Image (tube, rainbow, N blue to C red; front, side, top):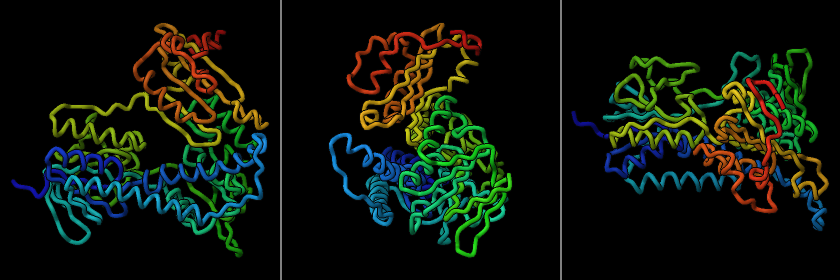
Length: 461
C-alpha cells in the first residue's frame, strides 16, 4: 500500500523535531504535527526560559557581592515585565530555529493537533486525514494537576510561571523535586517571599543525601521556608484575592500564588491509542521496548511520553537511536545509564552516576573522595556558602563510578565529568591529570586520598 508519508511524527518538541529532520535528511518523506509551538517543553515552557529566570534571579547576590570587588552599586530594582518580554523574544527566535530546520529538510508541517484513527491513519484537527507507514509519538508530558486536591484549579503550574502578568509578592510551592527547588530559588532571588511544602523528609529525593541536606540548609539560611513532612489539604480564595493554603497539620499559609510542582504526566490523553489496542502504563505512559517500539509494529514512541527519563537530551538521544534502528537497520538501544544531571538551584547541583547510598549497596567496598571549602569568588565577598565535591570509587577496580558537586558551575562540571565516568576511567587517570589553578574544579584532580571508605554499606574509616 502507498502511504502519504514514510514517517509521521506527532509532537514538535526536541525529540520529535530531531527524528523528523534527520529522517528527512535520509530522503524519507516526513510530516510532523504540533498543536501549540515547536520546541516543546524545553524551549517553550521549560528548561530554556527557566534558565533565563535563574540568571535573572542570581543578580541580587551578585549586586550584594560587588562592593567587595570595589564596585559601588546604586539603588537596584527589578522589572518582571521586562524579563518576560525579553524571554518571549528569545523563545520566538528559538522556535523559528526549530521550524527553519524542518523547512530546510522539506518536512511537511501541520500546525494542529493530530490523533490516530488507525495504525496508519492520522486524523488532523482540521478534519483532514493522512496516512503514514511509520508513526512516531513524541508528545511529551504536562504538569500533574493534582485534581483530587480541593481548590487545585486556583493553583498555577510550571507552564504558567513563564507568562505571569506580574511577579507575586509571596508564593507557596508544593513539591520537593528539581522543578519545585529551582522555582523556589528563582522566586526568592527575585525578592518573593517563598515557602516550599514537601511531604518527604528532605528535598530532592533521588539525589545524593549529603547534597540534599546541604542545599536544604543553604536555602533555609537564605530565607526560603521549607516545610517537610507536610501536605496540602486545600486551597481557597480569600476576599482580597489572595490564596489560603491549608496544610495537613491545620496551619494556613496565605500567599499571592500557589505553584504546584509534583511531577509531570505523559501527554497521551485523547490520542486514540487505547482504541488501537495499545494499553497504556503508569500515569498514561506509552510502554515501549528497549528500542522505543510500542506493541503496535509500526508505531514508536520517544521522550517524556514514555516516562523513562524525562530530560530533553534523553529525548534527542532516543530520536537518534530510532533513526539508527529503523532506517539503518542497526538496532540501537537508548543508553539511559550514567546521565549527567544538573539542578539549577542556588547553590547549583551537578551529579553523574549513582548516589553514595546506592553505590554503597552496589559495591562491596567504596572509596569516597570528598572536599568541602568556601569558593574563592564568594568567600572574598564575605559569604559563608560552602562547596562540596565527591568522587565515588569502586575500591576493587579503582573505577570512578559517580561524582556529586554542589556549588558554583556544578552543572558545567557535571557535563564534563560525564565523559570520564561514562568511559569508566580509574581514579589514577584523575590523579595524573594536571590541575587548572585557580579553579574550583581543580579539587576534582587533587583529592589523592579517600576521605572515608564504606565496606558492605558501613563506614569503616
